[in-house]
Length: 209
Ligand code: HEM
Image (tube, rainbow, N blue to C red):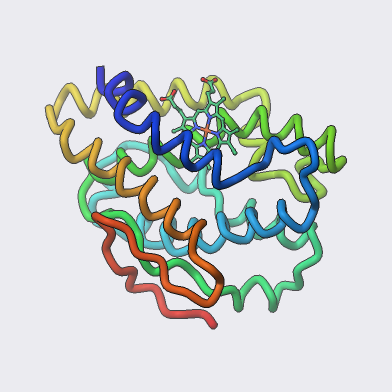
């Protein structure tokens, strides 16, 4: 029930995000891809740090440290030519979705974990067009490899049980919508601008550059 609702409600946002990230482009260039990875890294880094420190995280019953994407994205940037110092100094997104309570976090994680599904298609294209593998710059989009489907189903089972127990669909949906909105705004923002999106909260993470 909650999964169908989330999919229906966020369909347009997902399509809009795909349009913003032309990763299946036949003419995809390495510098375009590197820019996308940089944007994903600078979004996930403050978000995952805030999420894992949130009081609501403990109530989820999801071992998110095993799913976290920041280290994979840093690994990809390094494989794509950025130095450790370059990566540490990248300016991170300040406008994050609400992450204080479990319902909003679940909505956010629906979006972050769902990306591993589309990632399988993107991954094949990265390999075919740019020759990239998980080791050479495509570990984020390779997701969990052959475990991607089972791990998505496991996450969905925990989310569904939570939604049935709490009947808190509104905040779960709000969390997913705010995640799409903030990620989309961050993708749109030029490197010198601040990204703002409805429903966003300001991160307490220190500015890095
Ligand atoms: C341009 C890159 C992307 C493409 C081509 C793409 C494509 C897809 C495709 C084909 C699916 C369905 C997969 C299946 O049902 O097996 C999917 C699912 C999903 N994607 Fe993406 N995606 C992309 C990027 C993203 C990003 C960056 C996010 C979020 C950070 C995201 C979030 C999701 C979610 C939440 C689902 C699950 C929808 C559901 O079944 O409820 N995607 N994507």
